[in-house]
Every structure is written in structure tokens, then in C-alpha cells.
Image (cartoon, rainbow, N blue to C red; front, top):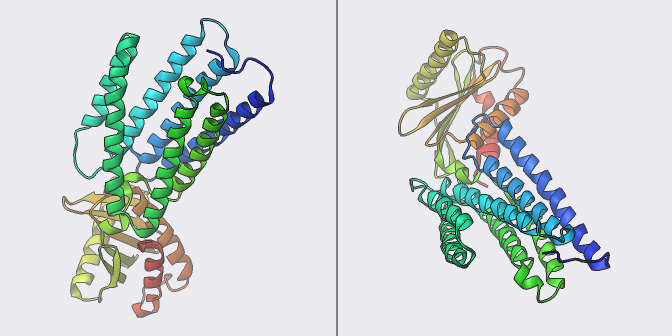
Length: 356
């Protein structure tokens, strides 16, 4: 059913806000999709990919509702409303999947599968039965969102908590905006539509701004899964060795164990590169309880022992080896005789790998 029947100032303001929403959400979707494409390890359940997909469906939902609210006068109105419901339903399912894939326990995607079944029933059920489908679908979304919030607050660092709270505020604004733009509320007064559009515009900007400052949801608290970092010269000589305790960095002495480990890692990396004829700068090995992540450059190799193979850690390794090799460009040309000249590198490790 069309809401705005004439060329009024109220209609123009509402449409302008909605167009701004389209612009921002499409831009953010592009940014998150680009971030996903640039990651060393790309997964379909990665939060950047899922969030970009969610924003696209949210855009489609708003587009279909705008066509209905501003331009359609005839029976086609129900078609656009139906398409809008399909889009927002798909977006909700993706949001549930995004949260479920980030939780530390294996839920076997029970929340996601249940929400898909309920939404499918919602689409085919008679109108008077649909309300009974909406309630459990909404309950699943709220329950999982609360579990998700509790988990993220527990594992995140202080800075991550601040950004996550900002993200939650943005999501709440989006939900309030959707409610204010509903037919039931706008029938009370048209001003609620403008308020809803404004809430959604604020929500999309705030939530995405916060999300850009966070690592992927699956990788919040990433620094706490790192156990050790080795920096090794191309000759096999260990340069730096740091241990991590719950995200805290501690220098480790260059003892015989460190020398042996460095030699084994260098030999392993060289052998695999030669056998596979690989020119890749990134490698990873799964050793059960921990992962060995490697990032090499012309003169150095950085190795991280971690509990998880996170894309955030790979990005930090890439940043570290680039800055480290730039800082010690001349010293790395030859086999080092005194590795103490690289001790300033510990400050670089703290700067890049520290818990924020």
C-alpha cells in the first residue's frame, strides 16, 4: 500500500533519507566484500563476507518497500511487499548464521537451520497463521543475539568491547527504524516513517563504522590465541623469540631449544617450497592443538605458533615483516653475527601484536 500519495516536503525528506541509506549500505557492503577478497584465507562463513551479503539483502528489502511505499498504487503492491519480506528474511538468516559461526562451541548450526525452516513455513503459511511463525523466528534471533553479546564481551579486549557496544547500538537503531517504518506504526502518523528512516540511517553508519574497527567476529580476542613468535634470518639464524601469555608479550632467551626450533622450521619451510615449487609467501601447518603460521620475505621469516589460523594474525604478520625488513634493511643483507642489534624488533612485535 502506497504511503506517500503526493509531491510533498515530507515525501521528499523521507525519500532523501532512504537514498542516503542506500548509498551508505552499498558502500559498506563493497568495503566488507573487498576486505574478504583481500584476506589470505577466505571462508564463506567469514564475518566480512556474511555482513556484506546481509547489507545487500537489506538494500533489496528497502528497495522493494520504497517501490511499494512511494510508487505503486495497484495490486502489484503485494508483490513488492512479498519480495521485501523474502529479502529481510534472508538477511535475518544470514545474521543468525554470522553469529552462530562465531560462537566457541559447535552448535551444528541448529539456530540457522531452525530459522530457515520457520521462514520457509512463514512464506507458505496462510496469513492468519503467519503470526505464529514470526514469534519463534524473532525469539531465535533475540536469544542467539544475547548469547553472542555475552560471548564477545567475555573474550574481547577493552578496545574491542567499546567498538562492539557501538556495533550493538547501531543494530538496535536499525531494528527500531524497521519497526517505526512498519505499516502499523506509519498508519498512526506519517512522521514515524521519517523517524524510522532516520534511525535506520544512523544505525547503518554506526554499526558499520564500529565493525570496520573490529577484526572478524570469529576472530575477536585474536591476540589471546597466539603462543609464540619467531623471527628468523634467511640463513636460519633466530633473531627474535617472544612468548605470549593471554595476549601479553614476553621476551624469550635465545637458548639451544630456540636455535633447534628455528632450524627445524627453516628446513621444513625450505623443503616444502622446493618440493611443491611454491613461491607463496604464506604457509600454515596444522599440528592439532596449535597451528604454525609462516610469512616470509627476501631476508626474513616470521613464524607464529597459534591455537587458531586467523586471517587477522596473517594480516599482522604481513604488516610486521614488511615494517621489520624496512627497519633492518641493511642488517638483514648478511648473516647476523650479533642478534642483539635486532632487539628493537621486540617493540615492533608489541606494537603490532599487542592486545588493544
